[in-house]
Image 1 (cartoon, rainbow, N blue to C red):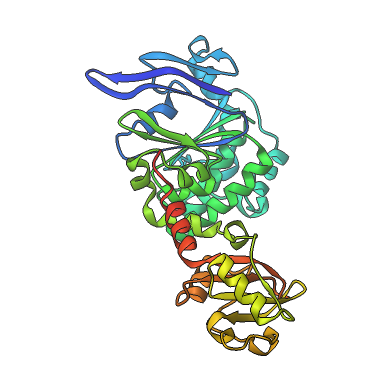
Image 2: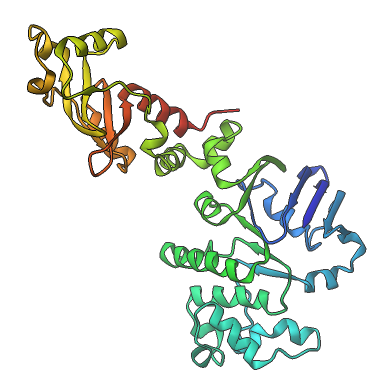
Length: 369
């Protein structure tokens, strides 16, 4: 665990990091994000003492980092930067082994092979090449596994994918998510890209002007942004898209519903409508929806059963697995309670149009707490 305890960093009269406190759990991918000048990179670089804290303390597994020699501290923490920083005169294999070389050790060839295989780079094809023979994405992969070569418990990553083209960046993000599950390290990842943060982070620390605005899981930031700055930084489109992505009809439909059986009398069904103040009722045979009846189709037909008056009557059924867009499209021109069914026609509940839109609007906005 990495713990920040009332940590500040000042450069003369400028406060880059202002009295921040939080814990980074072991084995989590912790993202620090914020606009330019927010203090995110400074906060990360204080972990390996590339920047020394002005006030407060940072602990790694309950050990104050000020009690550790800075050089020794950095050698036990992996570090990945945006520009990769590969040595152009060294082969890929030699670049991967550079930390061991600095420590007077030798990284076994089979370990170099294992690391290359972690990022799907065939050792026979790559370990004897030089950096300028690799694409930007391949070089960044080498930067990642070089940080793993000394088997550190902690890896710091300073906007490692930001210089790559969108396609390569997306590919590396996907590969990195899979890699983290395998290597199971504590990773502190700095980025300015909210999409990247939401995609990769177990938790996200959003900073502004040296302070922490909100710290939480991606879902917590998306569904419960604490203030307008958080909402604006995330973006209304992402808040809405996230709400829609997790929307499930069965979570919002009303399960306590009034129905009519197909063999009921007209008088009984009219009385039922009056009791519950509705003009249309779903009609079922057992638990299967077979249609609906309306008050105006029943009036004047007392003394009969409703079976002969079952029809569409403007009611539209919705499959319970429908997306939010599909549900809205199905009930766009209906202002009543719409039956929700399984793909085999079993009636599960009803969905009210106005309530659905109101719920989505609230959920998409996330609410300001």
